[in-house]
Figure 1: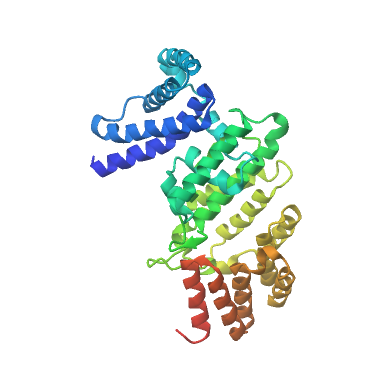
Figure 2: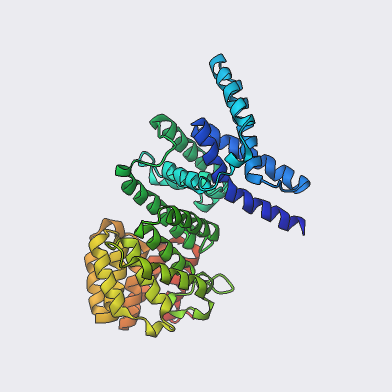
Length: 417
């Protein structure tokens, strides 16, 4: 086994175990910020020792005990009152049977509690995403900063403020009450949805996607789905992620150029993920009132099940978007509805719907509004106007692959290629 493979295996294992251990430590010591620091120190110790000494038989128990010792050391450095508390904590940690550290059924429960803590309404969305990726996803501050194209110091401050907010608000380490669970679960799902979207199509930078972010969102959503099995929207979100992510290998050329959906090589789509996503949405759609994630997943399934772009069932997609508009105020839903309407009722219908969206401040300066208009104008044969809107869209996007794609379309229509 090569050293590189060992290091990769340890990194993967630590990323998986970190939220489980953090949950155990927070549950014991009731201090999120200090516990997070202790677990990070334990993970660093493991990263240094395990390649030399080998992975212990029970790596989770090893990490937990090291983190416990770090917490006790921190407590000992404080006041006499805290020292007395540390002696109690040390005795508890020293005599904790190993089976308690790996108690079946609590590891993922603690991970779910961490998700709810990180997605607390007291936090801003950006802080919730950053803290979720750090505490639950196991990403380093540098990795998160790179993903969102901000300096590491900026991201460190954002995470620090989020942890301070949790401390000041007195958020307990427990699942929300039954009255709060529905609202808090919606927040969790929304944050995971945003993380996946940022990973699947980055908002800025030289890369079209960040696979580590999208894969982490899928992993965390699987946990939520498993532990909140009665939530049809959790199942819908997981299905949506799987059905969308199934196309990732076909989205770019070997040179990294973006390939539009209707030009992708569908033999590259992940049929296993598609089958899992279709099965999930087929199982959950009849169970309860339909939510936005389920409807988006159903739309993604129709795209994925079409053997060719021209076989896409656009009337059914349009009908689903009509339903989706009733349950979601997302402007991108209206934009995609306009595309579906154009495919069913003709380009003029789609362009008319786009005109109505010009007054929506959330879309007025968004590159996708111009990109969709350019595409519909091209289908209509109005190439000069299409070129202008492709260029306008390119000027507004922060994603280099998207910009290159849009400029390529403009050049193609204007005879530049």
